[in-house]
Image (cartoon, rainbow, N blue to C red):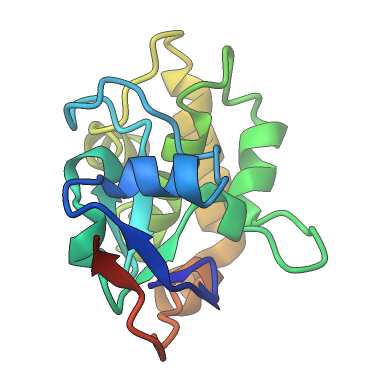
Length: 173
């Protein structure tokens, strides 16, 4: 599988979730384990450009596919993604636990073209729960990032780029 632009060959048990693989075997702790039932969105990652709950996805199902985690959104030189910058500018986090999943989901929300209004953003971000109730700031951050990215955010957002998988990456062990 390709994770954040790099191809990996990983041996794991067939029952391992993508979330556990990312956190425990690949040392990518940005993807959070919240409810572990697919209800809170803290574990949201992009799979071939579409947002998914990593806790509900078997790692074996991601063989040959491209995954982007919150760690993969910034450019190689460390420049934050427009959505990451907008979350900081709008103070769109309190405890911060849900923030990585919110940011990844916001990237997809913008790219999917669902950031046209605060109401639309709230609807399309509803799968990501914030226990601190920072929803107004989160919606403001998505609006800010969408305005910055404009049409380019929908067409060629860097996190939506699908990297070709060149190596069989996941093997049930």
